[in-house]
Image 1 (cartoon, rainbow, N blue to C red):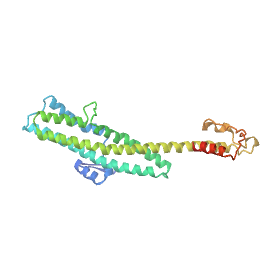
Image 2 (tube, rainbow, N blue to C red):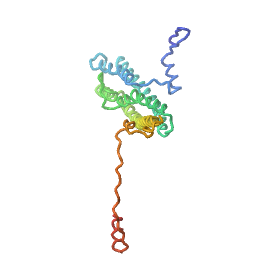
Image 3 (cartoon, rainbow, N blue to C red):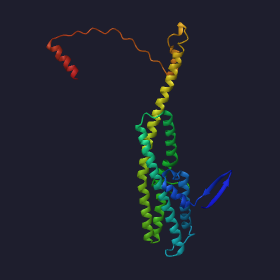
Image 4 (cartoon, helix red, strand yellow):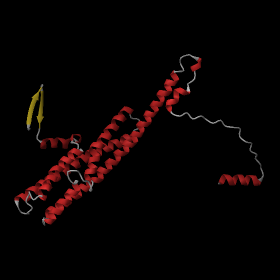
Length: 273
């Protein structure tokens, strides 16, 4: 327990970060969302370390304490971020499965459907899309390269230092991050399908509701008892869109049937075509 504060009869407890992580492991809904800001903040320390190495502010001599210190920090940040992404992918996969079930359930109340649609759209915008961008091997942010390109940079650095072990470690991290792109993309595709189908369903419901309101209003206008308004007026239906009249059918021309073999053969040939 890091701190305890009481205000207005309410006691608030601030637990150590490690304790909170254990709580989150026990319940998937407690996982902190990895938004674009969270992912960017997670990269700041790694980018800062890379800049210090570029400007020779840190030892690049294998075997020195400082060299191993900053390598340990890099490995810690990269592995911790990898774990957070893995945990959030598990959460997103479960959410995606629930949305897939919702597509099959067409009897859901429209208000519930709209609320779920808004939740899915927000989730996609805040967590899924930023994660897809983050895991893309060609991503370049304003403050630095994406995680794959950053790991590639460290891999090349370790190669230039002739540190084979650390170079191999960066390669393994690269492969692990690249492997995460597939499940994230799958979740993104599933939620995209849900959003498109649900949006269409909501639009259709709104259109039907709108048309029903117009028709009901037009019908109620016929209930006044006035004989002049006992039928629905076309003007009351203008909001439905253009009114297309039905063309009258003229008298059909006479058609002579014959029983001769030649006539029947011609008729059958035309039907076959």
